[in-house]
Length: 70
Length: 186
Image (cartoon, rainbow over all chains, first blue to last red; front, side, top):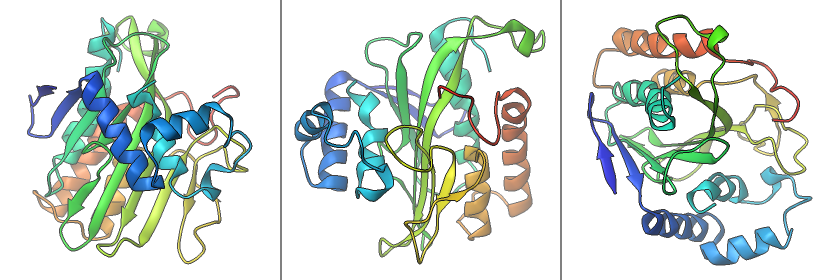
């Protein structure tokens, strides 16, 4: 994890790949009650391809986190 | 704002958000996964406190995340003081204010993927959070101004906070490539 606090005290924190993966897992668990790996598997299988993102609780939030791991 | 390198462009992109968040009284950090290195044509996400949101006293929790992509900068779109080979372009955003009990006060969305009937920026408001109310593009700074309207705790007085956010928003408004609906393909 690297930090950039200048010039103000709101930090920019760059996550390592391991930290990002853990953060994605936490996000999927919290928002959809599934692991990050399960989300990725279901995403790749096309489960939500035809879904209205707003109709699936937590999907917008977890989809937003996808660049943490991909 | 453009940057000489992809790293510079990301720093220039995030700095206004850093400075804007500083007006709020709460713990805030912008987290981003660099995925090895910042490079063109890769979508990245920044989020507030690693997607955990920011506690704002009794008001509740403000959550924010944004997708951005590093793209070539068009030198004709920026003045001589703001030149660089790269800049960051927003690809999606999600800002949300929730009460301490977890009820959503508002959700500001732009997620131009999936089969959503609302691929353009919209807001969900209670009591019917299923409705997509079009908003045009809402800047991060504007979302922070909304928090001030909801009496979010501040580190500076209200007028100064609004002035800081207006200043940080100004360059974005000057250089952004769309305001109401994104160009086709985004």
